Length: 247
Image (cartoon, rainbow, N blue to C red; front, top):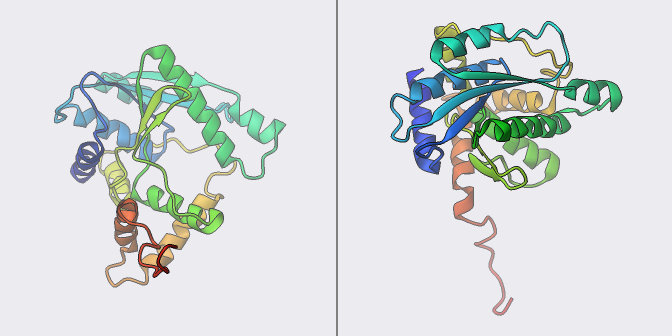
């Protein structure tokens, strides 16, 4: 967890993610990423220069009655974190009514809307999401290969429609460190009830990244891709093209 915390500190300082008096909700799906972020944000309160209030919110998609969030609630009670479970029909709308073949984008938008609405009602001004380094790279690769553009999600985003700020404190944390932190801290993991779990383009990008890693002696192509992503705003790819005067 120490390494993950160091990554969070770096992200918070680089992007000014947390300010004094913030009320932050961790979006908790029950998976390893969100559970590690929840504990890390709990621990980070003790070393953060800016003091903040911490909540946890789970959006229940209504996919399975066996989706039991009791272990998350028990941890939140132990750590003094207010925990909220928001019941929705998102799963029914996507898989039964609309029968989406590629459900992830719509599901993400609907979950984002649900958590933002909950935050507004609770007086929370920021949502922390558990995306790690490989998630940043996966989104970058999907944008490159499926949209033909260089793009990925932002570490800090102001959502103008909801007047909510989204932060991603673990963007510098390698997935292997997140997995290690989850195991070492014996964090409870709730299996996703989503029918599309691990059968998405994002999962394909994870497999592609594993292949790219094999082309480097150190097995860490992700480190160099991440460096390129962090530098892309400082130059334009076509700046060195020679042009005729006046063009």
